[in-house]
Image (cartoon, rainbow, N blue to C red):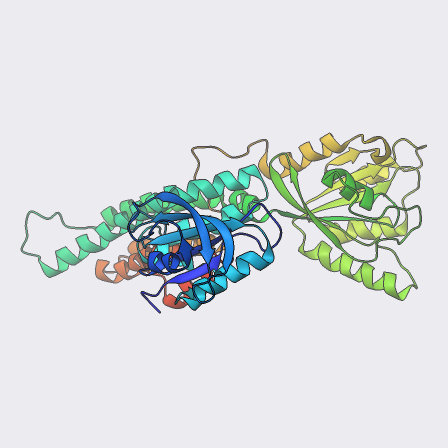
Length: 458
């Protein structure tokens, strides 16, 4: 309910140095003051820290020794009074502290409700709110840079400028229609409207041109490691993750299920999946693993196809080549420390121009060459440009594409000399789609759904 005071644990549950219970709302300071033994929190200056103890007002039992921070509206994240109670880490103490706060009249916050209040109170827009979650879930420094740029409002400013350009077109047309007697207002022509929409289209195209890179930074490259059993797939996963994450043996078929790990490769997040070896088998359990491997392969953004240097190509290897077809993949020839039995010319023919990396995982050779090949494949030696605005959110990309489609429809109508008051309907649609990115025209259901994906206490 609007206007009530919310509370939640804002640190991970478990053992740790500190735990934080956060409150936000008109009664946040008063509620905290009822259970705090120390200074009168209702009289302390804003943005100050105070040492004291949390005491159960019903039993006078001391719950914890704490530091309380008091921040008064409107200079807070939520633009409301905010109190953060910093206690000792541990499950029991922090849960008792939260329960005391709830007993005194606070309500347990919903996922993302603190950030939602910041949005509803005008502290941030919707794209900045989503950037908060992107920062939390960042897997690499590059991903965090993209999210930080968005949180700083660079994307918001650009989108609002584009919306202003479209709004000026709409307003100009409406003035011409409603007030034709105004001679001092230049008449909007088909050519003039096309020029103005082209400016916005060019900027949208620029954003979409780097959107794939931004999406990679945010979500990572879904990377499947495939090949016949015992070619070194699990060893490659362990080498990239730099720990013994997967079991490695000389027994073929050891990996029966998909093992998934995130790894940072040259600033690029890879969502690595070590799959069961693909081969024909009568083992029922292994067959299930092989089928899962096939499914992973179909949905992967990148495939690392491993071959064994000291074995000739088999029909299973050739079958995998045919499965890959036009998918992005890199061929890895492992075990180069052993005698060569692999027909390299046939491999090159089957790879059809795809990158081939020679590797000896036993001696940790070839890993750097593989990392460089992955970077080149997706970024052509270009990573985050500090001055570039990257679109990384799937929702934003979809809305930009819809806005572009609406403006292209407007251009088609202009070419056919459709009356400008009809053309502006498409221009207005584009304006509304862009508004959904920053939350100006987003529906309440969309807003609720977005914030429901946040963690508690944020």
